[in-house]
Length: 123
Image (tube, rainbow, N blue to C red; front, side):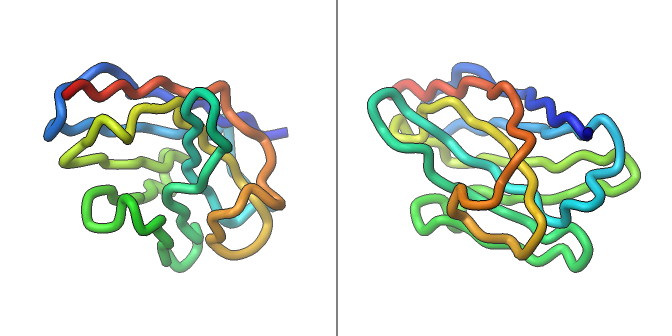
């Protein structure tokens, strides 16, 4: 069973950038979409960005559109989340997960969750 491992989190000041990586232990088949989610203390887990691996089509939450970019490197079995213009409200634990189906942002159907990587943005 494929394992997903997140990395790249850290602490930055508002306006800064980070790039998160979600590395799969092998091919993500039969899954065909990968998404990034985040969860802040006391809040529900929310979808941030998703990508349909084959076509490369993407989907973003309104709160990050224009600031975050999701991409994939099929040769490396890795999905990235480039986060620019970070805000304090982006502070959360970020997780990646995979699913069979299109690039939705709800947690439904997503499996093989990674352990998460912490992003902290200070004002």
